[in-house]
Image (cartoon, rainbow, N blue to C red; front, side, top):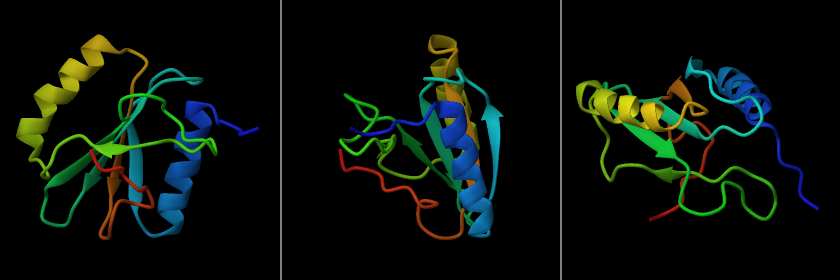
Length: 114
């Protein structure tokens, strides 16, 4: 049996781990504490943003870990990303948006290939 963390607890643990690894992070939009989907914005040193979101299908793998995939093939600029995020929020009020300043990789997340 796999244990699935409530979204609020998962986000808190993710931000603590990011801080422990020297990356600053914050919740931009707080969604449903128990079961909201999570979008993670990873800010790169070149001011571009990688976007990780839930893939189609189950939100968790067989071990209970959250699944993520790259929402875009290439990193984005904030001006391009903002309208997309606004649209996502308008459709899903339970959505969490988390930002991380990460100098290396995906802040401990492993996005799946599309």
